[in-house]
View (tube, helix red, strand yellow):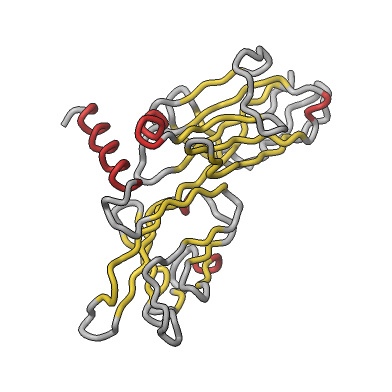
Length: 258
């Protein structure tokens, strides 16, 4: 199958998911890494006591299903178990979201009789926005990278054309950075949903907060903040402040040493 065919299939799948064709209860949640999130369970019973003893939460991203919650009880054999909790409304709460958490989550209700489901499954698709930086060079040049970890995996071009999802950098006032400002150089990846921002730090940039937004229409879905620490003096390079680095040229993600 050609690459164009694969892109088209991915776009059709994304449109189906976001418009609810794949399931009337499917929802999409956007969150910034490091924050806490609540994934709603839209098929939770209203009058069962205890309410969540029929609830099971599953996670899937690599065609492998992992059971996180089993009939209201948190599984202890998962990597996420210390960060998970079940809300009184049967929602799934995840603390300190990381880029490893993006993917598909499914809330199920079981009767416990003959293994039959009580209600149709309710799907939640979690998308994680993450900002990282390169090492600050001796001339105080730094590059920031903002990536939207989306499921199913699609490019920014597909997000824009199908659902009006945009990824961009904003200034301190929350206004999109002026593309004519020569101080900033920007680039993006047509494969992964990544945008970069390269600049030379000034004295007033010490402890400045940089922000990347993902929007749908005129609504901000998530905002990732990042603070670059620099004395504003041309000294030896500072250590990397984040363990993730993105190479825009070949669209690969690699780990940097802390």
